[in-house]
Amino acid sequence: MTARSSSAADNPFESWGSAPRVALTDQIRKAFTRGKWALALRGILSIAIGLLIFARPLGSLSVAALVIAVWALVDGTAYLVHAFELRRYVRHWWMLAIAGAVSIAFGIAALYYFPTLSLAVAVVWTTAWLVTLGVLAILIAMQERRLGVPWGWTMVLGFLTIAAGFVAAIYPQNTVATLLALYGAFAILRGVVLLFAVNRLQALDHELPATPPRPAPAP
Image: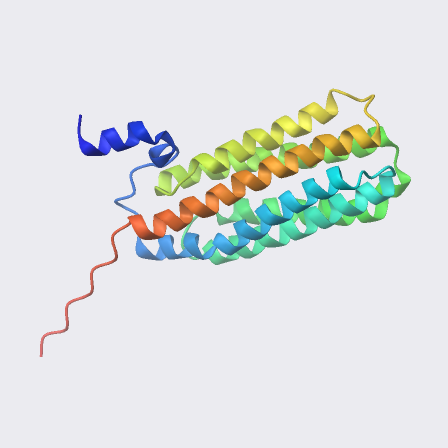
């Protein structure tokens, strides 16, 4: 067994979700590593919202709508900024842009309509938002794998988001408190996955060889 395979056996997360990266250009690498701040912001926000829900239980749908709306608006804005950073380098930037637009639209709708909706309708809306984001995340992960950047975390995030949406939908008898407990747990798990992604992108910046300098033009 080679040293590389031994290392992978000791740490299965080192290579899991990472395709061969020899073809990754320096421009794409820099574009993805610059997006670390957006992932870090989304991860910290998700964990903060999850802890807030558990620390201060929210009993009314209007307050819950405010929390979820702020979450969706900030998350969607970070998605859009990251999408336009990658626009010049990758073809799937529009998937990120759609995910951001969906989150922003949902956040605005939550602010205006959730306080007047029944709990059942609010759950349907939230489920549609989560499932849409989950499907887009899986598609984005497939494109990231083709580019040779760490993609496993995006795939996990996609399935986790879809699961959260369906779990909320199959229990229509949930109260606001139990529904928010579910979203709180999902928010914390999601934040952990996003911060893990930041760590992987940080490692990517150090693992890939630097672009060799161009030779000086002949006199």
